[in-house]
Image 1 (cartoon, rainbow, N blue to C red):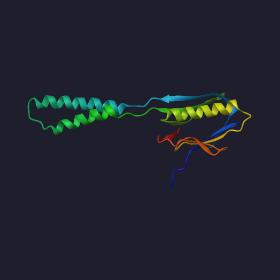
Image 2 (cartoon, one colour; image 1 turned 30 degrees about the vertical axis):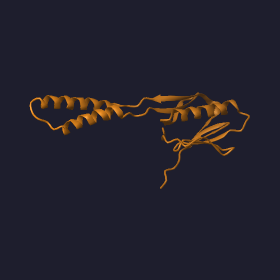
Image 3 (tube, helix red, strand yellow; image 1 turned 180 degrees about the vertical axis):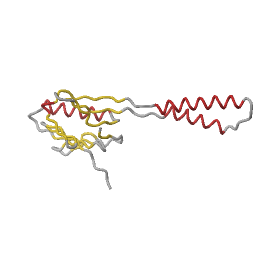
Image 4 (cartoon, one colour; image 1 turned 60 degrees about the vertical axis):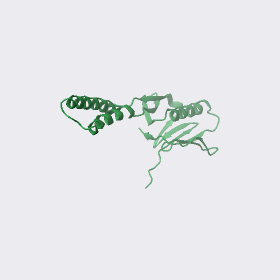
Length: 160
């Protein structure tokens, strides 16, 4: 069974995300918020690897230890150095009543493109604007021309 796509629509007058609809005239601010990635596992792996490595060096001074045992702490240290979580960026809508994070993505350019489309819709009330944004494959379709204005990006987006 295929996962249902989460769509986000922008027109001249409204922004709809799922079953929520916002009037563009009521928006006071639209911004991108960076959520820093939590890399605790990475730090723990490095510290754990160093502790095991120092322990093995200390033990090896009194008895013979196979070189294989040194691969364990080295693996932890390498994992800790190269494993990083990417930061996530949230699209935040603010109205006079409250603020709402609509969704987040690891792709900063995708969020920036959506902000520019909403800004364009706010500035050009007389021209016809209708965009459909698929958050699963991060594509942006101009419903008037039928063209894809932001290609399929491999990074995932998730509903906040």
